[in-house]
Amino acid sequence: MVVVNQEACKGCTLCEKNCPLDAVHIVERKAVVDEEKCAECGICTRVCKFGAISRPEKSTDGSVVCSSCPVQCHVPVGHTGACKRYTNENGKLVRNRKLVLQNDAVHYPDSRLNGPVITAVGAGTNYPCIRPAPHIVSEVRDGVEVVTVVTEAPLSYSGVTVKLDTNTYIGEEGDPVYRDGKLVGMVNTEEYDSKMIAVGGANKLTGPDGFTVARTIVELANGEEVELSVNKKIKIRVQAGKAPVINGVEESKMRIGCGSATVGLFAKKMKEAVDEVIVIDHHVVGLFTEHLAGAEVGMEWSGVVPNATKSSRGRYFGEHGTGIGGTTIATPRDAIKSVDMTRAKAGMQILVTNTTGEIRALFEVQADGDVKEIPLTEKAAALADDITNNCESSLASVMYVGGTGGSARGGVCSKPVAITKAVHEGKAVLTVGGAPAYVLPGGGINFIVDAGKVVDHGFTWVPTPATVAPVEYTMTRADYEAIGGHMDCIRPAEELRKEVEQG
Image (tube, rainbow, N blue to C red):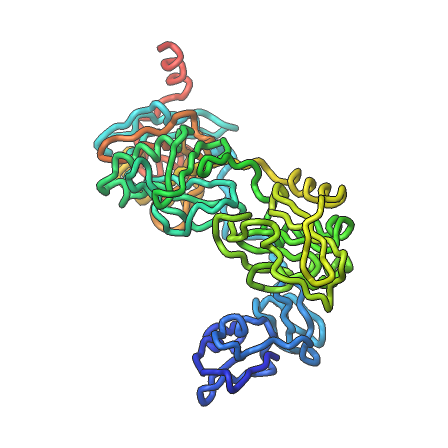
C-alpha cells in the first residue's frame, strides 16, 4: 500500500476525497491507509500538495499487478483496482462483468428509410409553421410506401462545430473566437488529435453580433473559407475539406496519436533504431524505454528524464504552449531534462521527435550526462519517416448543429410530440440536405450533421437572425398517418420530379 509521512501530512482531506476505493481516511487530522483496499493507483500521491504520500516500488504481498492500463494497480486479493473492472480472485484478475453480446436498448430504423425520397434543398419554407411543409412526397420501396416531408427550417438554435486536425496551440478551452472583431464563438474541448471551435448557438445569434454569427455559421457550413481569431491574437483560416492555416502556417499532418500512443505503435521499430525516444506532445509525452510498450519489447528505463510532468510509466503530461507539439518546448534539446548516469551510458542515442515525425533530432549522451546533437542515422531517420508516413493529412471539418424540435414540426404533422417521439424511436429518420444526422438523446430534436455531406451550399440564413437548414423526415405512410400527418398533401414523388425537370 502507499506510505504516509505523518509529519508532512496536514489532514487536508484531498487524498480521502479522491481515492476511488475508499482506502484513505483522515483520522485525527492525519491520513490513514486501509492496506486491505489500497491498490496503489497513485491518485493520492498526485493530489497531495505536501508530498506526504509515496507509492512503494514493490507491490504488497498477494496483490496482482494489473496491466489493463498504464496505471498498473497492485490489486489486493478479493478487491478491485481503481477502475473497479477487475477483481483479484485468489491471485488471478477476473473481469467482474460478463461480455455483453447484444445491446437490446438500440432500435435500428427500417433500412427502407435510409435516405429521403427528395432533399429539402430548394424547397423553401411555409411560414407560419401551422401550414403544411412545402413538399410531402411518397414512393414505394420494397413494397412499402415511404413518405418524406421536407422544409427549409429557420433555426435560431444552431451553430457549427469546427474540427481542426492539428496539434498547434490555438488557445485554451473557453477562449473567445472572433470574426472581423465580432464575437462568434469559443474554443471548445479538444478531441483526439484535433482542436475544436464552437461557432454560434442561440445566445450568440440573438446577441449584438448576431448577423455576423449567422453569416459565419452558414459560410462555414457551405464550405467557404473563413478567417477566425482566438483572443484576437491567433489567426485561423479555415475551410471544410482543406488544411487549416494557423498564424499563416498551413498544417500538413494530423498527429498519429499522443506521445504515448506513438511509442505503443512503434516500440519494436524504436528498439531497432535507437537507445531512447522522446515523443513530444502537449497531451502525453512518451518515453520509450520506461513505457510499458518498451518493457514489452525487452527494454529497461534508460535513465533519460523528459522535460514534462510524470503521469504514469513512460507517460508525461506536457504543458500547453506555442512550441513543439503544442507544448512549451521550443527545441528538441529542450525535451531532455536530464540523464541519470547511474542508468545511462555514454554514447547512448536519444531520438526526439513530435507526433507527426516532422520535427526530429538525434542526441548522443556524453560522459558527464550532457547530450550533444549528432546527425540523424539512417535508422533514426527511417523511424521518424515511418511515423510521418502513417499520419493522415491535416484537414478542417465542419459539423452543423441544430435544434428543429420547435414550431417547424407543425408543418410535418398535427401532433408535434408524436414526430419527436417517432424520430427518437427510429420510426422517422431525420436527414439534413440528404445527409444522415445524429439525433442527440433526451427531449427535442437536436441533431448534428457533417456539413461536408450536405448538398452543396444547402444552408442559408435569414436576418431574424437564424440559419436555415434543409430538413427531411422520412417514415412509412402508416407511421406518418399515426402522428397526424398532413395526408391530403402527399404527392407521388415521380410527379414532383417531372415538374422539377420540366421547369
